Length: 339
Ligand SMILES: *[C@@H]1O[C@H](CO)[C@@H](O)[C@H](O)[C@H]1NC(C)=O
Ligand SMILES: *[C@@H]1O[C@H](CO)[C@@H](O)[C@H](O)[C@H]1NC(C)=O
Ligand SMILES: *[C@@H]1O[C@H](CO)[C@@H](O)[C@H](O)[C@H]1NC(C)=O
Ligand SMILES: *[C@@H]1O[C@H](CO)[C@@H](O)[C@H](O)[C@H]1NC(C)=O
Ligand SMILES: *[C@@H]1O[C@H](CO)[C@@H](O)[C@H](O)[C@H]1NC(C)=O
Image (tube, rainbow, N blue to C red; front, side, top):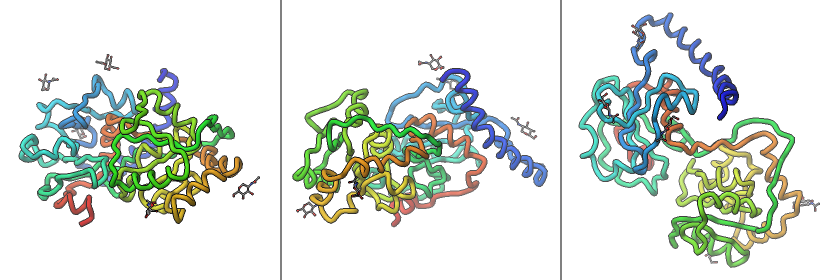
């Protein structure tokens, strides 16, 4: 991002920041005793970087990349005692509690439980029945820190560009399990139409940079989730389909749930058809104007991905003033699984 773009990007956030400041001033006049955290720089300790990687946190990374000021992001565990927020990513927790501190460092410290995986891929939640978790960061809309894999951001545009198409349906899959709902649907569908499969689980692995250009040559993309859970709508939709200009055929939560995120006319849902054969016929007989109608959303929206852990963590600082204080999750598994 060049300096001009950055100033523009930051100033577009300014309105929001001013709004919060005005709210804050109101609070000040009502309650002169303000919690010290509200005006100081927040220290956010990431206990383990998700999936074992590491990110460049040099300097004021939240301000530099996302215009979020007053946020110190660190992985330095020596700062535990002074951290305002400590973030634990589930994958690195699931083997046990031996690696995490026995309790919070001070009463004002809040612990965040982070997982962007669905319940089917979030094991070992039993036993988290204390008062350690104050907030949850998840793809779920009811999370304290709701961070979807992507979103449609309003904008207006006269140009709806649809990439040139040379194929009908593609699918990229890295973990294929015969028993998954998506595998059954794929097998049935492939009896009626040709589906080009790419990715680790196929005979045609793609280099990371070839993935999106390859998908964009296909009219349709199988945005099939690895497991079916409400709100669990991943980059398979946002990046692989929407960003490439391939119409998503979704398998995941209900159509109604998808419509809470995206326009009804922007996708094809497997549940809309009585059988795989019906769906196949729908795809092969669709005329040009009908096909183009799936891109109407592009006149009003643009896709924004949320795929960087640094952005997700910096967002915690931005939302900090409005997060519920003294909240705890006495039974995390129950909350996440619903029973
Ligand atoms: C925060 O504000 C309080 C009250 O105005 C002040 O005493 C304190 O020094 C401030 N803290 C920081 C780090 O600026
Ligand atoms: C980390 O980011 C800073 C600031 O952009 C940069 O100067 C530095 O070279 C980066 N370090 C690494 C190891 O990439
Ligand atoms: C971690 O923080 C401590 C205390 O501020 C500091 O002495 C140490 O150098 C830091 N370690 C790293 C790797 O930055
Ligand atoms: C696949 O086809 C079989 C046999 O026709 C049918 O029983 C099954 O319900 C179908 N599954 C899906 C997901 O379409
Ligand atoms: C294209 O298909 C749609 C939906 O089936 C239909 O309503 C429309 O009349 C068709 N347009 C043309 C030009 O055939």
